[in-house]
Length: 128
Image (tube, rainbow, N blue to C red; front, side, top):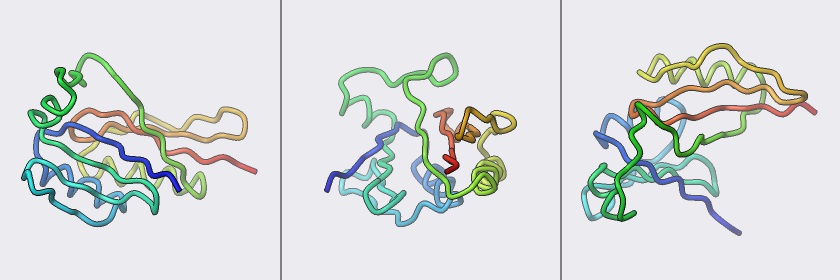
């Protein structure tokens, strides 16, 4: 079985981990380097938060400036349209930025937000 690891640079590990726990991500395993924390999104998906300097050392290049560009949008499924809205509303309450109302595209309902470090995420529900 394959696992997915989403690696993101953050300014503050503690506040970033608190933000994601407010969205229902679980666990909070600090790595030995002191600059990385791992949270569980689902059975096969982990979110790996790195201090920006550690992320840049790991990748060998500067991290994207989320004020001026996007490198990736992370999309996660939800069980219903209502849950999509609840999760994005929770992100906003936790300090993130809602990107507006939900969008319908055929059987898909999606709504986006930016986290505390400006990374763009979306929750989506596929009807059917």
